Length: 113
Image (cartoon, rainbow, N blue to C red; front, side):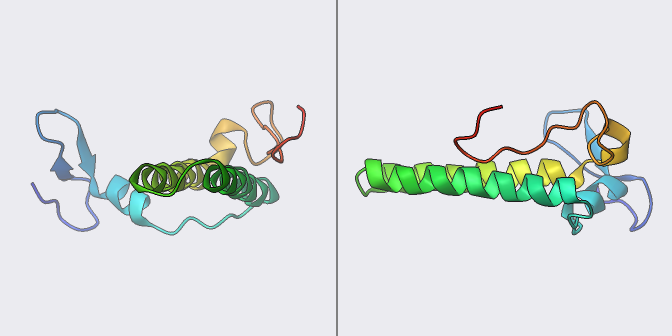
């Protein structure tokens, strides 16, 4: 189940599934993906701002306890995955970084589109 470093042989397969992830995909998932464009920087900031404001409101509205802690943990997880999606995508391939037709400007919480 282990591939050779630097090769495209499968690194692992998910239990009960045919899908395999090659070493290139695995390295891509765990690599650092800097925000190399203004769009990506703004998108990351927008996600952090939106979910940060949501977390603050949640703390104000929900009593302290296990459920609130889980809600906050899941907001952190949502922030992680949203930022991973922004960072990992090849922007020029999907029109995000060049102002293409698929570009969507990040909005601030409470703003109207």
